[in-house]
Image (cartoon, rainbow, N blue to C red; front, side, top):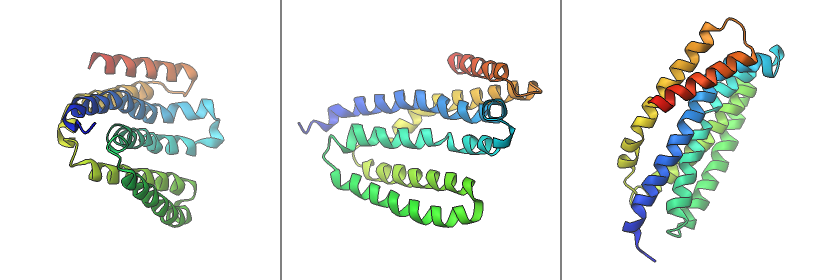
Length: 184
């Protein structure tokens, strides 16, 4: 209805709720990857730990981009921006996969995905800057960022205390992380 001023509290609320969920998911998954992979996938798949550790942050990039898309770009009929974002993603994906897989193998594919989703989220952010106070939204996300970093530290610490990677180690890490995040 063109009442864009009324959308701002809803958009900021959506960004806050998404970050409140996406930050602990990304940081938590990254933190448990090293101790989870050996018992879950087996020792022959240790490279998956490195992949999960870095690719967990896709959760943040995709969540951020999707909130901007569904809460601002689609309701304001900015289909052209969404198309441009998709084309940018395709180009970045092709170029980065070609270059990074040659250099880093399977890890290069992971980095290419991060670059692709990062470029798309950055483009959507840039195009949304006129209608959303993104700095305010980021400031409001700071407590969640601090809590997620504290949680990450606690989860990694529990992992260091556990000599062998077992399912119980992962359970302890998840419980410790959940407790720290909830307290924060």
